[in-house]
Length: 360
Image 1 (cartoon, one colour):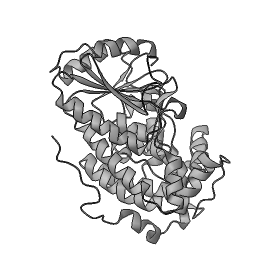
Image 2 (image 1 turned 90 degrees about the vertical axis):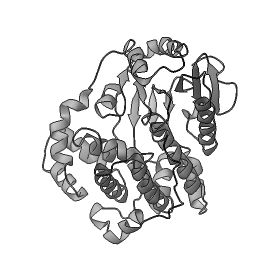
Image 3 (image 1 turned 60 degrees about the horizontal axis):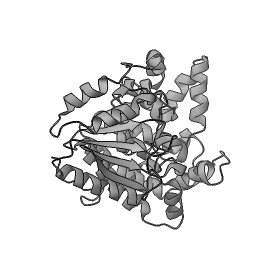
Image 4 (image 1 turned 180 degrees about the vertical axis):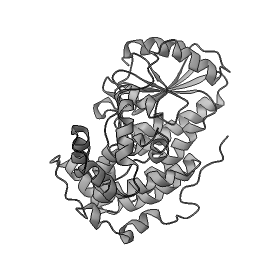
């Protein structure tokens, strides 16, 4: 997006024709989202929802690298080190915004071009119209930070076909655009060269245009792809990841000598053992949970525990701060993650800690 992207602050919200444009505007940071940006997005949605001349909302990222690389992990790490409250405040407001996006009454179109990770998934994959491209690299790599796929990630992943979501959630493997459609994180592949024309068309839709009409408009620019490379692997992935315990998933991979199984095993060996066990339990609970909001409440409880944990600080240190890619996890092995360690992640939270406005 070349026009005036450098102008304004970290979040640009404005009307263009009949579209309400929300642009994440931190291109040097691949548009990593801050607490203030979440607040500004919420204000923009207030304005666009109330404006009868706004027919559709479009989410986009400044620069050429991607929509959004996630949240401001460094700020969270610094707050965690001094036992601050940024995690509690940021995740509360972010998760409430994620739920608002899912229920937004006007068509909400997300351009998921380039890198889309973590918090960027929360801002896009809960929208009603999710557009990916041949450049899309979508991932939820949080387990590598001693965390888990949050922002409603457990809700989304648990609704992917078979164990595809378990695979992506535990390994943090990157999805292509067509992979994201198969995993139910996106709806249409549009060539990146056609995004400007699609964007222009969206600014000209009439107020009152419904989601079915927006779908037809997007389809006119789309390739029609519905499945990427991961679809062909589903039977094998299901065989390995349809287990209730991490130990059993590891055993299944170890007993399979294939290159794919060994690659997955190597990837899991780099992740936080505690993070993997927490993630697997959250995914299994999400599978039998009806609403996004229920999953977000569960994620919030677990996130507060993660924020206070050594694993989170160590994972961020190794990946983002020192970049030595050599985290020292606690405990170091899956077998050492006890029920007592897990209990606080799944404790009940107070009714007012994460309160959603009534959905419209």
